[in-house]
Amino acid sequence: MLTNIDEKENLARMERGELYHAFSPQLVAARKRCGRLVGELNRAGELSRRELATYWKKITNDSRPLPSPGVTDEEEDAILHEYPWIERPINIDYGTNIKVGSNVFINFNCTFLDTCLVSIGARTLIGPNVCFFSGTHPLDPDLRDGTNGPELGRPITVGEDCWIAGNVTILPGVTIGDGCTVGAGSVVTKVPRSSPLNLAILAAWLGNSKTNTSFDCDQNVPDCHVVAGNPARILRKIERSGKSKP
Image (tube, rainbow, N blue to C red; front, side, top):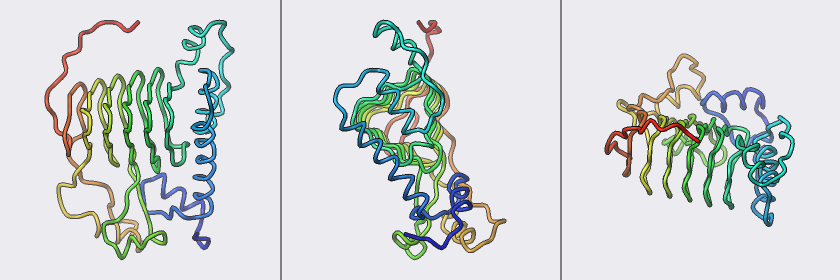
């Protein structure tokens, strides 16, 4: 564990998508907190909708009070629509960098490496074994340096009304527009157009604050498209029916 670093600045670097140390005492403690709560959730027996929402609030550090209980299960479901349906097990790194819209479904064995913000829009369906990897590492092995070296991340954004099918992997910096479908087994990534990222990363790590470490990447997935493959490519546009939601 690395103890001789500025914890506040280290956390700010992580949140800004800059190089930071993941093995600082503060971040190790944050992952342990999340791991303990996720472990409790995964080991719990049958849970009511309200109990599941309570676990989610703890994991994501959501301080808002739950609404008053409904009389029936149907009423409870409607009242608690802002909290996701979760099929366990689920795997989460920090929990505090996940934002989920209303009426979202998360199927079995999904993984959230929420180094940076992972945002999922309302009414989106997440299939089993889907991985959201917002964290990444330098490609230079000398800079990477095992647990002593720096890491970085980029936010992931999934729009409203999406369907992310089973075994999809979504990599750092990806934005998927509203109404999209991602085919099973796809890897959704953003590939740099120009020179490798390593030199920019190294310059930033050595203290050159003027160096641009942002990804120069291809276009995000536009609204209402089907993408599939490794790497995922656009297959066709989706024509919306215009039907109102119930």
